Image (cartoon, rainbow, N blue to C red; front, top):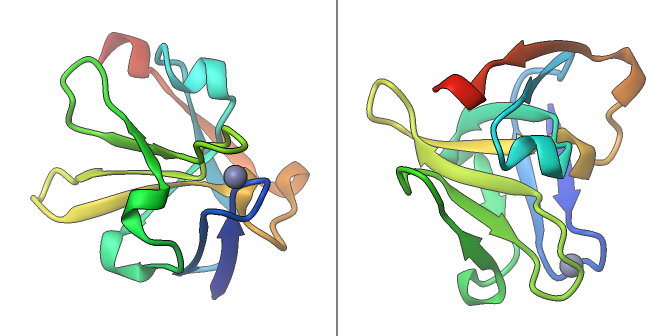
Length: 116
Ligand SMILES: [Zn+2]
C-alpha cells in the first residue's frame, strides 16, 4: 500500500509504502502522550519526502536518538526518524497524518515508553 501523509497546512508532505495499516502503537512517553500520536513503523527508505528537509522542524529529547519532525507553521508532528534495533534507519509515522486510514478500526497496542 502507498499512503499519502501531510501536516495540517501541507508544508510537510510525503508518501510512504508498506503493508496495509491494521494496527498502530500508542506510547505513553512524555512526548507521545502529549501528541496523541498513533505510530506505524517503516524502514526510512519507504518514506519519500516531498518537502525539503529545511522546511521541517526537528525536536529531540532524552537520549536524542529520535528526530521528531514537525511543521513550523501548523505545529503538527507527522513522523519521527530514528534507528531500529538492527541498525536500520526507521521512520515512526503518525498514522493520524495519513489519508485513507480508518483510525477507529485500528488495533492499538500500548507501548510503555515512559519506562524505556
Ligand atoms: Zn503544516
